[in-house]
Amino acid sequence: MKRINYYYFDEENDDFANTGIKTHLTPDDFNYNPKSKWWRFWKKTIYLLAFPFVALIEFFILGGHIRNRKVLKPMKKRKEGYFVYSNHTSPISDCFSVPVLSFPRSTYVISNPDSISIKGLKTLLRCLGILPLPSSKRSYINFLKAIKDLYKRGNVISVYPEAHIWPKYNKIRYFKETAFYYPVKLNAPVYVKTAVYKKRRNGKSKEILYLDGPFYPNLELNPKEAQKDLRDRVYAQMCKRVEEHQSYLDNRYSYIKVNSKEEVRTEIIKD
Image (cartoon, rainbow, N blue to C red):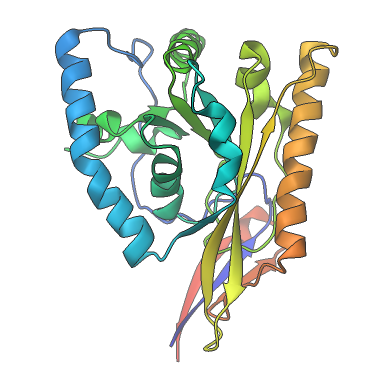
């Protein structure tokens, strides 16, 4: 059996995705939301063609279970979209679960620039809804305009405030309120998707996703206070789910705190 030890120093910034991708910064003139009819036609076509495979992988290969989907009922007749905030514990399920739960609405996933750094896949990933984080003030302005437009057109925006993947981690890591700028600015509803891991008989774990919400910004507060308030409620809900369901750390994984950045590493042990 293969066991993996993750040695971490900073839970906010240490990343264990281990993609091996050489990341390129998002260009200043990156077009987050192309307006051409051809682009929108091909993007929608590719998205719909890919969706059956996404659903197949999520439900039958990954064994994804989404609980409490009934909370989305208030969104059925809503013209505008909504936001989904999730803990970040799976490179595949995290990409596929939100499109599955929000269908027939299209989903856009805010990600780091790794997503546009893969040769040959950049256009495909963009068609599937990837929005790389901006790397400059100019690209940040374009990014915010795109978020607003996509939300107004009824799309779902998926956010992972923990920012970095910790595979099958069974706790909620600290994240900042800055990730809640968008829903506060737009006075948009927020849903919380929490990945909880249940123990199997063989000591391994299976993922179950719990959906909660909607949470709305408190507009009686100033913007920064409203971001913190919304962040605190989302964080508390995630913590509540992993605690009440006793989220389990797979016996093949260990997370070990170290004393310096230089000691951060992934150690693979084969028995």
